[in-house]
Image (tube, rainbow, N blue to C red; front, side, top):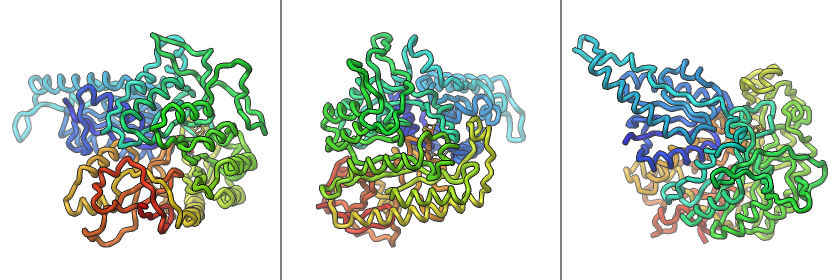
Length: 589
Ligand code: 5AD
Ligand code: SF4
């Protein structure tokens, strides 16, 4: 069977899609390799949120075009948002691409890939016998004939799933439902999707166009998936959605096809200003599962999941009911990723965010009142997203955003330069009038400010005890082992995982575009775990990278005699000894 190299750009939603696709392909007999060069099939699962992420894919495809001239049997596939956004134009521009599948068509990838492989093989055989070229080196097949054969593009139909839900089985749902829970696919931690798509139409954002309208998965499917993952040893689950707190499933309106309850379109909800008990007013007798209900049920029904997290939250319509559930349930992490995007009301209006700075801050205060309890070892940490240089952003608007950062004191905040995206309202109607040097300066200034704040926030943890989830060897440790040639099984495992995940980076002053390959709203958790560099010393203990329940990165040394493999995927109690930037250094207690 062919070997596949799959690289993922962007957000966690893409990472999950890649996992589902690769687990489906594995069951069909494909094998995966972390080396693009040795693969028969190269797949890119792409992100369109910012132009920079797309440029990376274009340049990778350019390189593959050269390779395909040498290896004509190579099959190249573009998956995800770029496939959706660019359509056939992508194949016209890059004839090297054989297969394209937008996010709503991923369930059909095995069939497409199979066709593409067969077509290429058949054409190769035919060329070898019928289309021969005389060359100075002798007679060889004319491979130019193969260049654009058998290409298939599936895209442009993000609505397919939602508009036909009542009539047809939602195949994407089946992709989620049939996921493999094999232990070598998760290392103790897994994503579970609760909604797909987005209805918010922020004026800068391409996600509603590439991922389509918001669709909510039936709660039974979500809970079942969590149970299956837990049975397979997963102890940390991150629920994914573009705006998770808008989750709502109305049981009386559920459609069933072939015995399977179908996902449901997101309903327009009435936002009642100043009302926080349950932003979705529940009529008497209505059978509804809200986000608060869903969290509570997973917590109660899947107790072996020791950490339940969710991203991304929308700052509006986040009810006290959800905060209350988080407070009452010890295994739900006190971590919120809740993008503000700007600290200026004028900008928020232009972005169509639907809240004011005052309302955002009111939410942050309310969340802290409910959830920030450092005295019992349960602080709340908050992460955010900011866009600088949105059309019309003045220095005054920018300073207001800096004030917001000071006021909120995020644990970390992702700061992006505005990137105009074709098809969005901002691209079509607003002039991208903030010059790039100004965008870069604002980006740099906010990164510097946030680095200071992150540093202060981290230092507050020195001396305290935390439970941390051990994820992998630290990058420093991996480097060390690579240098000594000791590629332990542990590292090999994390290498494979990295291949199917985004390579995000920390926000560090000096990086001009620190997160350009981060994706849409459900994003950002992927962080390069880089400890401070120091001269190699092979007598040093093995350094592991872990995460606190508030998503702080914690470096620990494996206790002598404990194989690192045994630690990965477990929760360890540690005492924090020092902090630098976003990273804590701790010792197991
Ligand atoms: N330009 C810059 N940043 C963007 N984001 C989304 N669209 C754009 C864009 N066009 C950012 C937002 C969002 C995060 C995932 O990406 O901050 O929360
Ligand atoms: Fe939806 Fe987030 Fe994009 Fe707004 S920024 S449209 S909420 S995905």
